[in-house]
Image 1: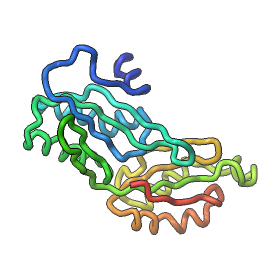
Image 2: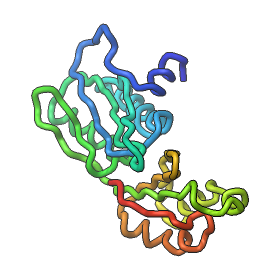
Image 3: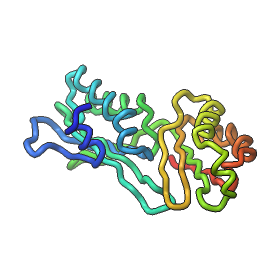
Image 4: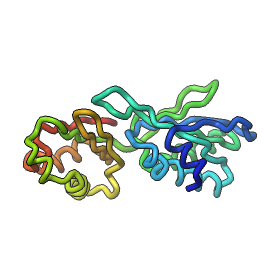
Length: 204
C-alpha cells in the first residue's frame, strides 16, 4: 500500500479534485471497522473487482466515529462507476454482500433513492476496562477472548475489528445470526475473568 493511499485510508478520503468520467456513488456500510480494516475487508477487494470487471474503481473512504459507548458508527466507501445501470449497481451490491456487508448498509446515489443492502448481522462484545480487579487485567488476554469467540461462532473470519474507549473495549463480530453468535459465546463470556461485567449488543 502506497503512502498516499494509506494516508487517505487512515484519515478518510474523498473523490479526487479532478474527477474522472463516470458516476460517483457511496456505499455506507453498517460496519464498525477501523480504517485499516475497512481497507482490508472492503476497499481493496472491491477495487480489484471493479477494475478487473471494467466497472470502475474505489476512490476513497472514511470511518465515522461516534460518542461513547458506541465508538464507531459506520464507514463509507466512495466509488466511481463507469455507469449506474441496474446491472452495474446489482453487481456492485452483490460483491459488497459477498465481502460481508452487514444488514442496514445502503448505496447512496445523487438524485436517486438510497438502496438498502447487506447480509450479515453484527455482535458487539463490550469488555469492562476499568472496574475489574487489577489482577484480572494483568493475567487475562483480550486476544484469547477474540480467538475463543471466533472459534465458538464458527463462521470463518467473523471477527472484524475492535474499538477502545475510556471505559470499554469493544470487539466486533459478524455472521448470519446475532442470536446464534450470542448463544455460542455466552458460556465462555460468563466464565472468563476478563469478560466479567461485559455486555453483548446487536450492532447490525
